[in-house]
Amino acid sequence: EILFLVEESPEGGYEARAPGYSIFTQAETLAEMRQMALDAVRCHFDESDIPHLIRLHLVKEEVIAV
Image 1 (cartoon, one colour):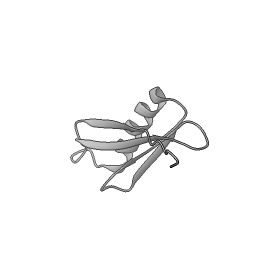
Image 2 (cartoon, helix red, strand yellow):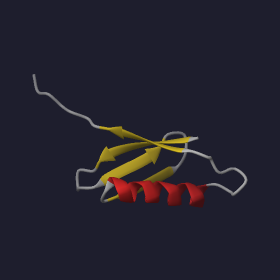
Image 3 (cartoon, rainbow, N blue to C red):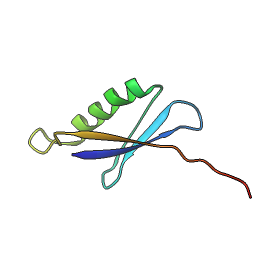
Image 4 (cartoon, rainbow, N blue to C red):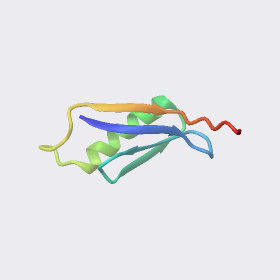
């Protein structure tokens, strides 16, 4: 299994990174993000080492001024 932290991009769309790996991808929609994460994993790993599951963890940061 591999985990991607997905955040909204300041420019619009979404950005995702996989902690512990040098994998980063971006997409305009969540549906597109699913495909982009799959493509990124397929490019990063050899066929024998590829994870069997990809987990997308949506992170929404909110800042509150005090």
